[in-house]
Length: 393
Image (cartoon, rainbow, N blue to C red):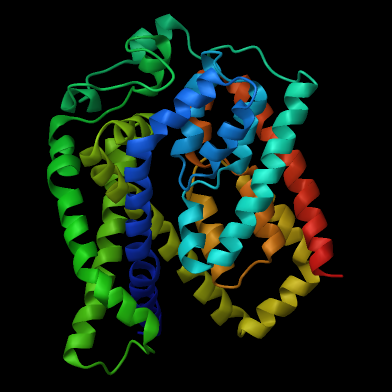
């Protein structure tokens, strides 16, 4: 019964403390991207001299979208390799939203550090002419054999604009290849996002109440128990939808990012999907943290362990950072918010993690993806190590 109470409590916290506020933040940023991101992309294409600064701005946009749209620009030769590295260093992926909600001071501190490191690294790479020849990782013959039947997002929009490439080119075919059949398309575009936003709107006052009042998750008045059940239901639905979307829908991250830039409706749809994924990982992180605290005998024991093994925590955070995808990075950011890792580990992870942006780059140029990872790893080790020793002076 105790473990069930722990799971229930963590699920309520994940949705009310993170999910609701992240939903609002992500939607606002998504709508801003929809309105203005095209302008930033035009500036980065036309202004070769300052493109590293624009790449840093794209990377610093919370979420993976800013770094993802740099990939086709690099593959098509419109931005330098240094600009690509800058965008990948400065992005935190969806982990940024966890920090924005959980520790806004840490979020802005990470922005400043990763922004400076990203720009400096990109400038050094371009100055020394360190780069790679673009080579697609998939032949046209393999591409034609792998393209299957799918429902394209572009069919839902009359004036669908592609980012960094043209309709029908090899970049378009590689990055838009997916497996979304009609009944799944109905689930994502007709049912889930509407249900999700209804729950979020209803939960906004409950989320504020949950944060500003003390909760023990037991012996509740009936209305309080109902409020908490809504939070539990929100997390449960997010976990179910994430499982369905990752195992069955299998959409392209680039396709989703491009769709959001073309349509306010697509922004609503894919923001709901992103928040579901994020809440799932936050729930896992919060639950693991509570289990760890219970197993070792309290938070004082955790602080003692961190003091004894802190630098290895930084190294572990770096290796987690080089894993493709946002999931592990969301987990690590949530553990930081809970007090489980030092700031130096968070910064090191932020510098070397590329979120979902690495997936389209791997699909188009494995060599470039490998080199980007290496050039992210080096400053992460230097900055993370330096911050750790400063913390322990």
